[in-house]
Image (cartoon, rainbow, N blue to C red):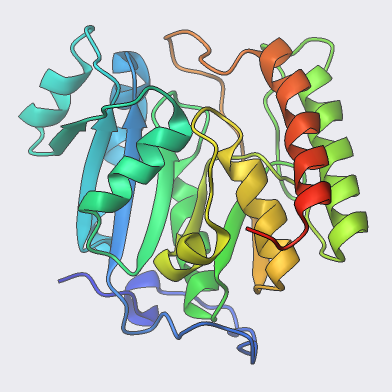
Length: 255
């Protein structure tokens, strides 16, 4: 089994000192990779061979009833595909957890935007004792794709949200919404997410900060989308994230 360890990751970096608040050490934990799909055959073909499957004990796909050959392609590559019951990225995560055997979960989207080659860096940080690690598109070494965001509305919104979350809850984050991230299953249990569309990563970041869980980020390069259509419309996200933020301010730690 592919239990998480530094020999596999082949990291030359000095490990960070483990936080005394860490829920548990990642060194002996099993790890699960969940890939999310919905009519992303072009994206899947673009990233599949770049996914470091050898780093995981379990790798499966949660699919939202694709009809473009995505499921058939994955099954031809020997990957288990689970059909989600409720539409939405947050719902897919919740349903995926029912099947996950890992104590550590890594999320990966299938549209080609998220770079699978960032995954080893995420696992290295989880090995160091962090409870959530986000692949940030806004660190100095990072790169964000704006090919479908010509007015950089998403970029501005994400940076504003990151500033407000950092200010309100005393953490230091630069990317609150990117789906490419890893976390412990215990972290998800503590944060009790209750969003089912595309706000779950934003809520997860906020609640980790509220609870004082050790979180960090690693740089990533966001690639150009490889076919398919955008599922998270900018206009919808632009209005939904402020609602999430206001609700989280009101409820505090009462969740």
